[in-house]
Amino acid sequence: MVELKESIENHINQISEYTATPGKGTTRLTYSQEDLKTRNYLKGKMREYGLQVREDGFGNIFGKLEGTLKDAPSVMVGSHFDSVPHGGSYDGPAGVVAALEVAGLFAKNNLTPRYPLEVVALVEEEGARFGGGLMGSRGMVGLLGEGDFQNLRDQNGVSTVEAMTEIGLDPSLPKKRDPKTMKAFLELHIEQGPILEEKEIPIGVVEAIVGLTQLEVTVKGQAGHAGTTPMDRRADALVAAASIIGRLPELAREAGEGTVITTGRLNVFPNGANVIPDQVVFSVDIRSGKEENVLNVIEKTKTLVHSYSKNRIQTSLEQLLYIQPKELNRGIRSLLKEKSEALEIPYCSINSGAGHDAMVLSDYTDVGMLFIPSKNGLSHCPEEWSDSEDIARAVGIFYETAKSLTEAE
Image (cartoon, rainbow, N blue to C red; front, side, top):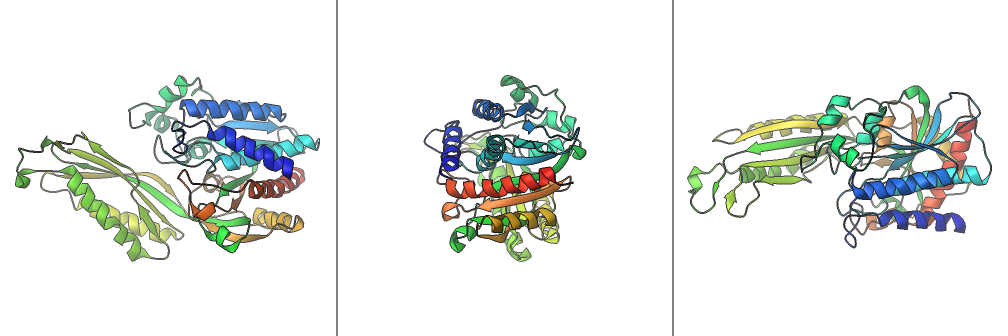
């Protein structure tokens, strides 16, 4: 366990160095130079652990340990390696590192599986650069078409293809993966909440993942001079947007049952201190364990947004992402609990209030997910921290689970 902990800590510490904001948290946007440094590190470790490495046309990374069965589907273990701006070192990378160490245990114990084992490192789960989120997993199962992918732009107008090419990736490589090549997918993630820490339980076996949608709202007005335009002559896009945003929380409270709504991104144009804003674009993130609540709040949000189209203000709304609440595979959940008990590792069942690549892949293969505690329940901030001993426990559970899955018919 000590050796495994040290290896995990070394991985986490090294990957945390690849940030655009040193000393101010992890900022590792997809197809950035920090992405390139991280992927080179991960590919190097995959080869060191005896895996065959490839990338797809999205830049997702796959490290494969071949099995004895010809053309058999893989048992995949992994997570994502991008970050939100000024995030932490564990959201995503902890899961990729755990997957690496599972493969490392296969190598250390000279195991050749019947079904292949694959370490997976996915791009743009957070959606921090190109919006929507879960791009790597959605792309590999065909939910993001070639045209839609090529049309994606970041806030500076840089396309996905341009950004990939800039760091030497090949967007012409095959993108969609046949679900028949996937036997199962296991993902470790930090909880990003307080439950496991408060219960003093090191492992959470995820039962279900919340449903979510991401909307993008555009409010257009008329630019003008801040000093010479009378108040009754203004079409201020920011004032209208602020009014809409201020009313959104009540929609979630009305729905109840744990429904939440968030505006996390706001872009103001032309963004001058002495210019009346003529356009505002902002995000609306809606989540609930019940799909009817998500759908209900979407409709109420649309009604609210469209009600502001008056008096020289124009509004529009686009749905960037919609994913139903997902129950994870019962068989794998049972297997994860069985292996936890055999290893005498305390666990509890838990639901996820955050979206993950696992929820996308659950429609295409059997999926299991583990959570480990987050210190003070914090995530998406520099203070994000999880104990390497808990990651090591999860590696042990995944190793035993992967052994069973790579041997089972």
